[in-house]
Length: 418
Image (cartoon, rainbow, N blue to C red; front, side, top):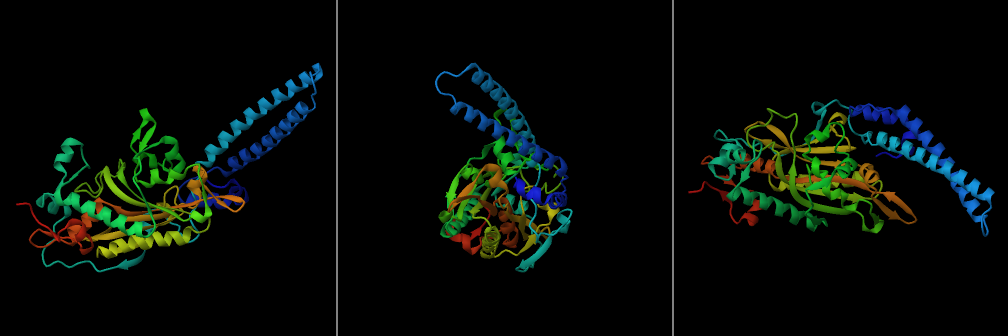
């Protein structure tokens, strides 16, 4: 949620920033509600002061005149407080529909076709044979099963087995070891959160709720990424400035309906309903988010450099930014059988947008300020596994394990089960 003062001072700027994200807002109505709220708030304050003064002026048994006057003040105050609550509810509801404006350096663009590649690292491998896709490899190695998963759970689910399960475990431990050394606090969060928390995070706007599994009977959502339950870890908290930055690394299952993606990436495990994810979340002081954003991106790059996988970094334009992000970078890794780069991570700053909606602050001397919040993917497990299988495959059908993961798996190659 935006600071109302910012909207009062720059209504056209906020309107334009929202439109750049494809959202039309009624700033005129919002400002009218704001004026009404402030006016009624002043009247309520005046009546409260009158009530208090009247109460202090009574010594002993009140006179009939004092009783009558007190009743009139109380009735007027009750009416005004009711009106104030009604206007405040309308104002907050309208504020909750306004997306986080993008940072000044973010490109204005209509959709993902206007995202910009800002960096490439590594060269795509040239094979002396025709490479196999990850599903063919995974089934031949008996480490991946989508057929039985479809019988048990339906389309877009999978089993990882044997060395497939161990490969995911190795990626998770590699990420945790790396990030804990960087000072990140490990956390295993819940995967179900309340509707009002998901709304506060900003993930139910701009049609994004369509991709969230909703347990309406229980008033809960299944998280689509573990930051959705890690960020609210400090809901209604006041941290100390000396304790910032506060960084977490989390691991959990994530769930997405993939609404609107029918027919896309149906083969294999690239786009599924359930997957596991290692996520980074940072809480920093006001104004430190740009530096932290670059830091999270550098960690994501380090992971794929250590895995020796070719990748590119994208700067995301406004039309593909989403409701709560002010800036976002994606990393895409090379997938040989698709002959293109595909998304594996993202890193976003949401500035103070979520902290205002969830009341997350820090103490800076005599002032309480809103935290800046960031998130970044370490590994969204299925996708780096796809990249490893396809980029490290050998002509005999085996897959070499990236050197950095071998100590976790206790072997240097995945071979067919005999």
